[in-house]
Length: 122
Ligand SMILES: [Zn+2]
Image 1: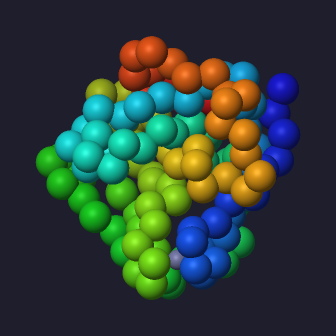
Image 2: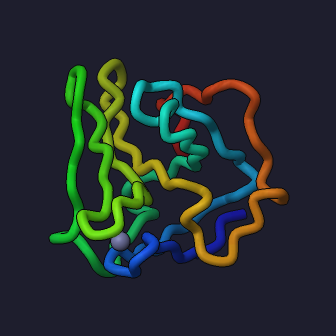
């Protein structure tokens, strides 16, 4: 069941909320940048994500086909979420760094052993 969670970067410039079903699990993206930052993320549809503050504070790092926007706070550097489109399917998604959710207990959030296909974002 989806619930609304809020999240933020370290300095508080970037704040967001999203409707997430934490039981859907989190995944480890295996792209170059996420693997090196050890990002554990949960995926939501764009309509389930609301950026509350910080749009102008966001830096945007892209590589490869440019399908993924790896966003980060220009002040503190925290990568709280990203946006993208799956090249093969055209499905849009927002990937949220699970550790950036306020009051989140990652121990209660199932971790997927393998990367979930992005086309299954819900
Ligand atoms: Zn920040």
